[in-house]
Length: 349
Image (cartoon, rainbow, N blue to C red; front, top):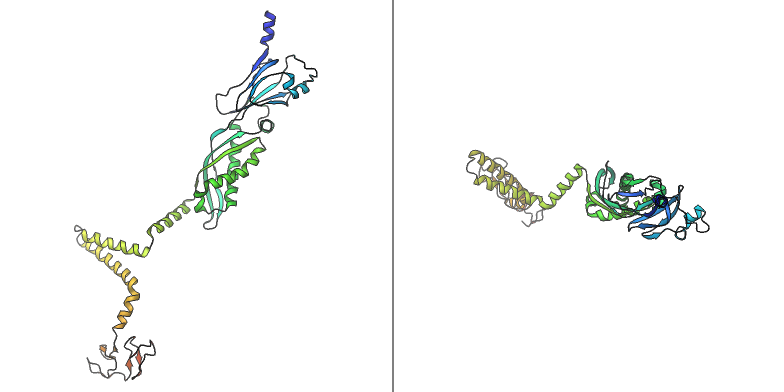
């Protein structure tokens, strides 16, 4: 009995693995110098794949389920071991458990600014960050291309590679989409989906696939943000001329209500009033000018400068003799005496 127990102690009859870290991608089952018993129980849980490797060569791959190891369900290993007639002795092989679940909440960000050519602002630098998730889609390719013969492999082993691929894919997506810098914030989902289409073929060569790619923020340069703020302010203000008049009126009201400032308040009020007067004169200039010219019924005396009625031969103020011609009653231009219509403005005389 002692010899039989010793022999059984050198054999493995149950092979399984559970992950407690949440970050392990590959775990090599610890044989501890033992051999696998033919007929041993292999348990592969959901989100796992077990791969048997014989002398460095990939043999059989087991999907989730419970297996009793026999030559019938290990065809590749049976062929490699030359078990032509179902030989049932213990054997040695390396067993790798591949974690195929999604690895969530992985953070990414641009370590250096991404250059972008914008039609409005020219060459600008962008920074972006967000999260992504990925999983092992092809365990055999992942074993061959990534972790090799490592006994333990975690997400840190591929995190750097994936992040750089993400940033490169996002840069291409921004450039090819030709979305203006001011509209990037409204197109995060479109950019992310576009980037995933270009990133996944690159990750497939490593046996990986990108399950989700989320852009949380794309930050614009400070000067672009200031320009956006100015445009937003202009849009809120609307008619700047009306806004300036409103501001001037408010200043006058504040100065009039402020009794404590004395002469200083009076000066502020006078300055605001002058500014408002200028604005009103500017806005009403087109209507005020005709009214002013309409008051000119004749011309001015060449001697004293007093107003002279149209057609007058002598100045009513100083008596100086005036020109023999007349003046238009509408525009004030000099016209020949007896003219019925002004040759300048066409007004009837």
